[in-house]
Image (cartoon, rainbow, N blue to C red):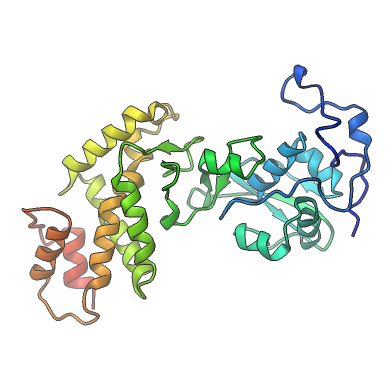
Length: 321
């Protein structure tokens, strides 16, 4: 299938590159009138869990085009305005098909990698793209810059991913993005226990109750962190380690490093607690006090005597069945 010929250069971009001396913004020229081939020149692989808008921006960058120029060149009508991470692009099936041809990625692979493709409530049958605003809960986070460069022909290190919790840390490059308000990842090399937690979390997913145990554990440790309970000294030390290596944590609007790095700071203990909760007998066969003692030991707390109103004590006593 041949993509719609729409006057935008998608072939041989390096042989007819724009004048980069004028800046990074693409400029028009003879190169902009080369007819596009049936498929793109480059095979551009998506990052796992990448935002659709992020992938398209990387694809455009490889051809030295803006996102709107790329879509126009593919015959895709762009509606609305937006940018990651506060908005996502919803593609119609026809538009997604055009992108698979240009990126030289099979549709099955692309839909597997891009969780928002196809987007719920995608536009109609024509090749269209529509910006959709995202609430804070569903916004993507900055991807590992080195992984991104490897997937982008070295043209950019910026990408956004809707990463699941077990992908919080890139163990290979020691980067993480705990909050969508961070434009660049957090470097974690000075905190090796984060990589250990990453591998432990992946093993947890094999447990039939792993996912639910993780969600419960995260709710508990988040409350401990916010209320400065039990692990405050350890978490304060870890936060300082991350802050020293990542000065940008204190330069993000009104948000503080205490909040921006929270999910990363509590991550090792959250995984430990989740594994402990998943390992509890399905039916209550031990008293809550015994379970608390065992969990405290796994967390490395020699003195662990939470009150009855504590989040973990409440879960073991009243919530868990």
